[in-house]
Image 1 (cartoon, rainbow, N blue to C red):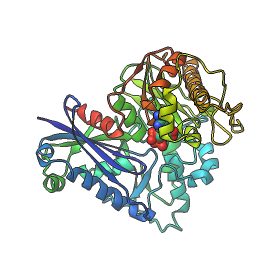
Image 2: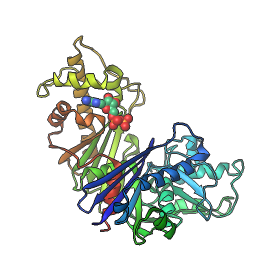
Image 3: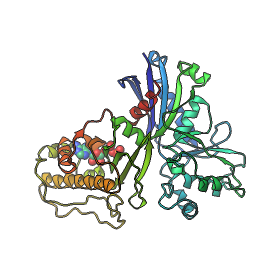
Image 4: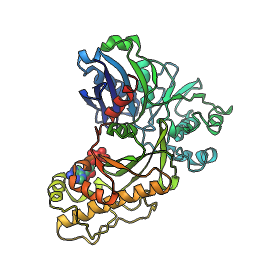
Length: 427
Ligand code: ADP
């Protein structure tokens, strides 16, 4: 039998899923990152985690593995020498040091571009350029890579290759499939003391190369096993759901509320933090609201959420009109940094209060999908749900009332499974 491996590097650790060609899971592994570590240790921790995950797969499955794909946290970046050795500490997905580069970013990038954020890959690249002397970064050509690119390199040995999901926030033009001149002019500028090599970009899932002979030997993987271009963790989680057609969406009910809708047309709107990733000939558009499970957790335990939800009649609408937030401000579907949390009036009865909270979040979700459609996205046809709130069937019924489309159970919600689906493209 042929097997396919998907590996996910999330915020707290690595996960692996191995499937057959039909997508049936034959094995799973999980390795948490150590609780405390210094930034210069991260690359070695990631390498150990990657190797540890592969070593956990039963030998007979490893021997028949055909392809591997890896996803990493979006905009986690590294600078490497010509041997792929990181020459300074990586900058993680949420590292906001690039805030000091915003003026330079705004001067070079088009208005509303996804690179215009303190945490974007390009903000990190510019930050490294700006600080290279105090970081003792030498002037030799250096490879700029994302976490997933570098982890793939450890398996296939080809340096300087990425995919168009990881490079969106670096400025790669996903419509024309090239780096725009405003970016290459900046990176190749004569006055730059740092000589950087931007990664060559291919479509996620593209076979890059067979694994190195050392990796084949070390893990008893077949020599012909290919490593495919990866993706980001949130796109891998979308792919895991099984959504493939325009109009299909995945709502993530985690600490925050995240919507992703597959569309014929891209939708980009910086005001609401909306941007689109290319997915073959389609576009994955979406937005994220600060409302969500973190607010529920401020009032209820997970057990209370379950028992109290069972007492709600989801077919009756709640008269309570909240905007549940932990602190002021939201961006999508309402862009207002001063938007106050609205949690009044609060009824004495906890069931009624929870009903109001769940229904209000459902209303915000529906408003989010309406906004995406108003901005040109393909109309919603069905919604898959991921995250901690996905198990709440009472909530699903309430949401269905607002969304007016069927709620569908995802095939899987783990990003590693989505990465395995990418690897499976190469059967
Ligand atoms: P994160 O975004 O932090 O990864 P998870 O996907 O793990 O979040 O989901 C955790 C959230 O799920 C919590 O904030 C919690 O309020 C919410 N949650 C857990 N159980 C339920 C439930 N039965 N109904 C609604 N929400 C729930």
